Every structure is written in structure tokens, then in C-alpha cells.
Image (cartoon, rainbow, N blue to C red; front, side):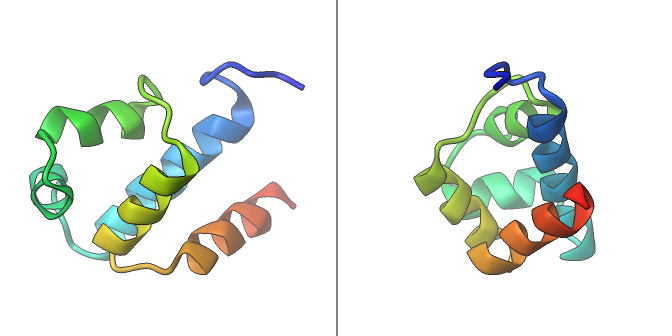
Length: 80
């Protein structure tokens, strides 16, 4: 199992997070404000430069107005 943040699976997660943000009509700055973090935090996880833990990922999903289940199902659909 590849552990790098640059794995294809992790890049897929980054893509899904970007898509969910765009679908919600939010900017990186707006998501950052909802998370109470700098905009660079959002930029870094979207580009794959920063890895999110499962709790952070759950908070990001909420900030994107998506359920954690929706996020996971999008990953499953894209993996098929």
C-alpha cells in the first residue's frame, strides 16, 4: 500500500474535495472562514500538499455542506 500523499487515491480525494467546494459555490477563503483556519490550509489540502486526518476531513465535509457519507460515496464511485 502506497502511503504517500501523492498516491492516486489521495489525489482522488483532493479532486473530490475541490469538486464539492465548487458545487457548493464556495471559495477557498469562505471554506477557510467556516473552518476558522487560514485560506492556505484549504489550498494545501486541495493541492495534496497537506494530508487531512479523519476528524479534519469530517469538518471539511461539513464546511462544504456535504455529509461525510456523501464524501465517502463520491470516493467509492470514482474508484470504480
